[in-house]
Length: 308
Image (cartoon, rainbow, N blue to C red):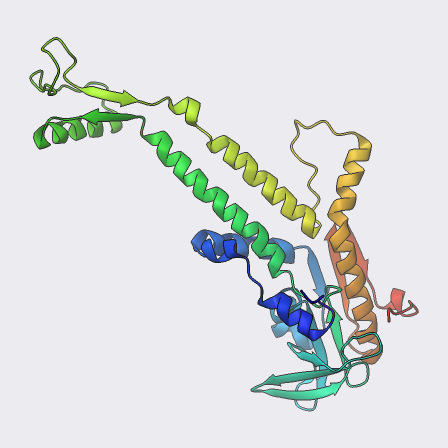
């Protein structure tokens, strides 16, 4: 496939969807996608102008789902963030221009001159692939938990010679399930093929305890969730029963910070550019990852070298 550098590669990448994602396109998957997405959003706080107050959620959702958001200046609405379409090629194969097309805003301009871009990621992509990747696995796991719980409720099979006998057995089972300690059945309820000294009710009982795997599935779900947390920068050392030396904890902390550090650097560079082009905005943000809060302040970064 094309690398996600040029727009052809970006379109190819964004058009891909895992087969598992389509197969598990149910309420469980939708639930976990929403839950994991909100879990990621909780890690960042943005200091935006008061004029953007109504668009705060819009800003955050576009930035994380699309991977970038444009900041443009309009005659009617002033300086505003907008979902946008980059185009053109610079010397480093990066877009040179920006287009916004929506019912209330029509805009085209040169990046760095008339508008700017705030990037979350290096490859101009959002985080939905990460969210979907783990949501599908959690959805599959919780479906297995449901089956396991259902199987643990029924531990026997019973044979009845006719419909009347079957109804009697179901009635007895309902009484026992309701908590009654004593149930009586007709001694003449005999099974075909059994002699008079045989038990009138034949049952098959499974060992529920031996086949109970719900606790293992729930532990697997915790592992999947911890892996997701490591991907997005939420520090997760693991369960208390684990014995980890200092180097192992540090390695896990480094793994947790890897992607978030890149996001923080991209946002810092982007905010530098926006604040230089539109100094009255004074954009700031804080990013929580690796168990710490990392803050960006425009005044502290005014002389910081920009990335190409």
